[in-house]
Length: 93
Image 1: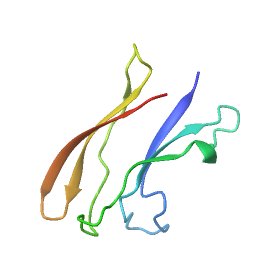
Image 2: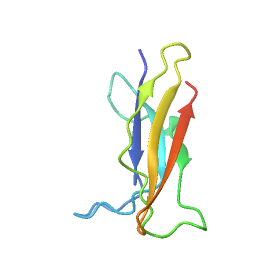
Image 3: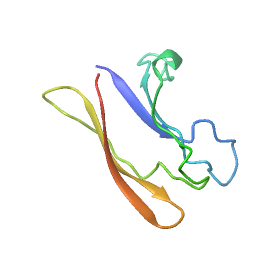
Image 4: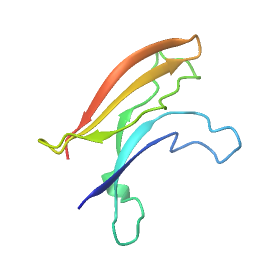
């Protein structure tokens, strides 16, 4: 069995306010140590030039497609102007 995690704001400083809420990354967990395998981390999305500083790539959930084994992440890209952009990420495993 393989274990994966999806995280946002991986580069954020450790503060009471968890900002920024990007990049959105996924990676595999070592089942023995339960630590993230650094070489497995991929960026799924991050702030682009057209995005504001307040972009949030959070409030996502993930599920496995039982036929393909792919991980699906339906979520919203939220911008501080209350603009929501629906996206679906598919990660081949």
